[in-house]
Image (cartoon, rainbow over all chains, first blue to last red; front, side, top):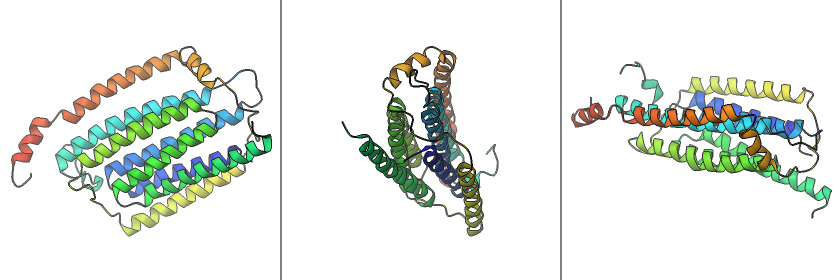
Amino acid sequence: MIGLTHYLILGALLFVCGLLAILLKRNAIGILMGVELMLNAANVNLVAFNHFSHSGSPGTVKLDGQLLAAFVIVIAAAEAAVALAIFLNYYRQFRTIDVEQAIGLKG
Amino acid sequence: MLAVGNHIALDAALFYLFAGMTGASAVGVVACRNIVRAAVCLLFTLAGVAGLYFLLNAEFLAAVQLVVYTGGILIIIIFGVMLTSTSPFSRFEPRTGEVILSLLIGSMLMIALVLVILHSPFPTGDAGGRASNTIETFGQLLLGDYLVPFELASVLLLVVMIGAAYVARGRRAKAAILMQRPEGG
């Protein structure tokens, strides 16, 4: 029987993988991938809580968690676009995407 | 129509399929040194999460996840990889000490999270049958109770579109000058 705990543990695994990607990648785009993994972990948790916590009310459908997850997806898309724009500028300045080379912000 | 027992078994099998795919490729995102391979692993992670949304009775979110994440964000990321790399297979190795420290932090956090999840009282059991019409309720909520965040999200997307375009092409003249120099600045 698949319960809430299964989904929460999967969410924890996704979050830890995202954190490790942020800590270990030296490519800035790898760090962005880690952020996306963490946002997905939060979304899995939100949708799972929404599914399993409104089980006692069969008449009305409650979708608060799903709506919150939808807004998280919107903001993740916006964040990815801005981050990629910054990385393109960064690559033009420093001729590399290695975050260890970002010594000065002014370039 | 499947019997109830078959339904639960099918749910469990599908959950383990999608969860295994999601978890394995999430580990792959971390483990792959090649950034293009990490992007492909991320594709499978996002698709697996979309499958989990289907299992959690969130059909609209699953479709949005497939369209926005695997169709949009991943393409943006791959474009970024191609645009910001002299060779698409370039790699930067982290130091050994950093790897050990990060794995230590990650495993400690994972153990702590799993312990907390296993020892917390959560509502158990399946959410009594499949509700139909979640999309209808979703739309009504989005244009009803959640109208202000909805409009704010559209304003945010407009601002981000303008801002990203401005930031990405703001220094074009200077970059052209840099590229003309033979020693590369």
